[in-house]
Image (cartoon, rainbow, N blue to C red; front, side, top):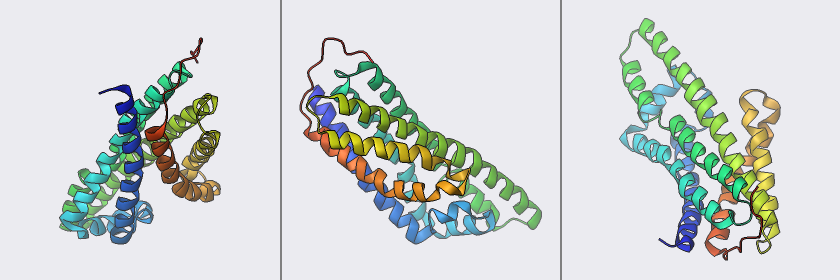
Length: 236
């Protein structure tokens, strides 16, 4: 594959992944009351998860693998912009890979361990249900809040921030895309603290709309971008 093909493929993955995220999100919102269900107790959430059936489990599995789009997206951004600032784009590529890993760890708990917890919860006695509820809450806190949401959102926000800053330094790239990216990244870095304080909840809600929009914008921009000439000193 040529460098140009790699960049285009990564851009398509980023834009297509945003559309796929929206589709899966809409399905889970209708069938599972997502994302409000994430804050519910095991006695409510686990039966609701089981009620979605094998189709719901399949959708969760698809959702769990969707963060893989950050890998080709990160490579595409690196190949497109490393001639401008190589060090910054290496770091952006690292954050893209970390975002893929952490978000997958957070999402994949639903069609796997949570699904089996739901099966066990259905026929468990009250004392056993208390134990299953504790396991459910612990996994939500660790894999959901800390790994998937906080570290995952930190990672892709840093990927956007670094990519957008370098984009602004590119002589031929449209500057408005860089500024939209910086805004999206900063809102994401603020919104990821929503589990700590409710004061940032409006910022997180706004970022839920801005994030897929910028993913599409950046993806299309990468597909259409022209090769960037490497300056004499392109380090950080």
